[in-house]
Image 1 (tube, helix red, strand yellow):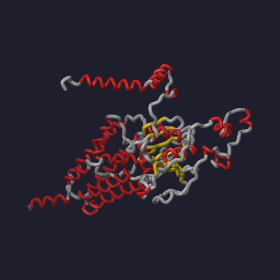
Image 2 (tube, helix red, strand yellow):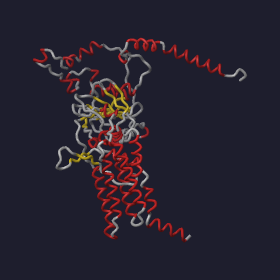
Image 3 (cartoon, rainbow, N blue to C red):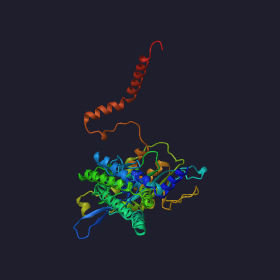
Length: 477
């Protein structure tokens, strides 16, 4: 019993063995922390155009394990950034193309937005608001440098605190080993975070040459849609979503060298016998900073996505309810086109008359008001307070519609093509043939026949499979 007590006392007074093991846990947290904080470029004074990528990620327990997992990635696909942890799709509204999002930045943008802008789908009898969808519309500004927020500065402060802790045993006992380990570890951290490929992968997209409208959502069955009205110079989100980047050739060799150096640091730490609690404190504080940086929400501008609310209709929320219906869906398209002919006339046909005297845009296009002549089917709903069904953080400029279809209709009124692009996402149709999707005539002939005979062929194949199964059953069964 006495030996056991002495061993426990020795271990808790100077935990040297467990420290080397702690350095092998939490590699995924380290990778996500770097992904969150990377992006700020520090211009080296006295040089022309030389800059270094800075990410204030603190030295923590998971760095040795991350060095080897990064070496595995470098030997394979040579990707440094983690995969998006928020499954979502990016929809280009001009053509309806849907792309699976692979971008860490866009995934975190949607995740953080969902966290900040909650929605309450609970029924009213449970104190909820029966909300079925929330659509937020933003103006997407030109690409700019990332803003340095509290998360970024907290990482820098953590580095200084770690150096302060490492200074204590040097001052009190003359033991400089802890300071040496801390300085060497943070130097390896800085080198790892300074690899240019981090920024290449994080923002692997081109910039718009003209305006475009893009939607970001998790898809059918989920509650949030972010609509971005882009301008020249802003990110082309569909290219950002595909996240295609050519790896830098030096990444593999730098990763190999860093793995060797981290191994040397691990061996050095294993040999320490005194003042190891200071290293435990340094690693623990660093781990807390890594966890906070990897998981906390951040403003879009911190990820180089400057957005502002669309002032005309910033938020549209659909609530469950009974929608008034009509007897048939027949419409008079000629009449509807006649109602918007002034928009067509002012949309910019480069004729001599239009160049000499450009036609004025109709007033109702700016006000969307019935008094100014907006067509009845395009007249939007008025913003209203959320009502008495539970607490809400929404402001008075929020538009409330009936159901998901009602919300998408309001979106289409304010942002043409955005609602149309979202309808097939939230209301997938059955199998159907469309000429516009197919280019070659021979392919059109095949698919038209396949669509026209699908029900007959499906029933025939089901009958064939049934007969096949019966033929496989033994006669004496």
